[in-house]
Length: 209
Ligand SMILES: Nc1nc2c(c(=O)[nH]1)N[C@H]1C(S)=C(S)[C@@H](COP(=O)(O)O)O[C@H]1N2
Ligand SMILES: [Mo]
Image (cartoon, rainbow, N blue to C red; front, side, top):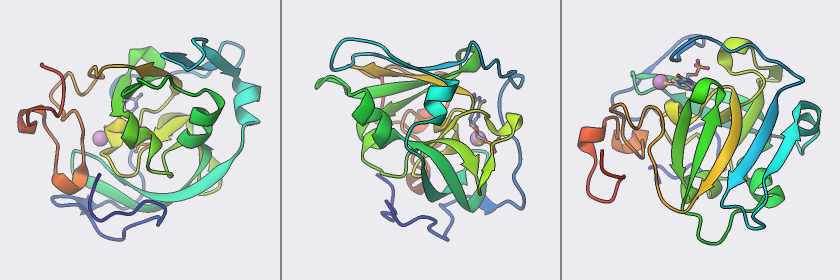
């Protein structure tokens, strides 16, 4: 994982190479902002689960899951960074406990509204104890443009690895590229190693394009 090793320590107060500090919090995404429909919303964990079953939470159930906070920085591959936000929500670790993956799971695909997706190695999802399905930032509910009701934050990877408007997690026994990873961004996306583009990938970093 990235350098320096910041797991559990919150903001690094330093910028990864090539990044600049952004004042405020810009909105960056592809496509329209989805409208939240509470009666149809569910958060699904599916694919290679340990028990072979799908696990689903409706919005009330998801909101009742254990709530944690953590501090993390956000680094957009287009070179702006935001430091030191406090995110609140459900840790990836909690989801992994409630809906465990099968032993042979190597990657996850995080799915969002409109088919947006991002793939992560299981270690990137599970081993940094700050990976969080955030519902809040700095104590306030997320706004629609920033991903309400749930967005993923993966502090040690570029921000596209954290979909806004998350609807589910697919456990996978082999790697597959998500939305941006198919469209020219790096399969792993470590900002400390400036893994921005897929042409920088080395053998083993990702499936054939
Ligand atoms: N669903 C979805 N999530 C997304 C994106 C997107 O296009 N669609 N863009 C990503 C990118 S590139 C960035 S930098 C962050 C930006 O989050 P923000 O708009 O809250 O700053 O969202 C990420 N999550
Ligand atoms: Mo981004």
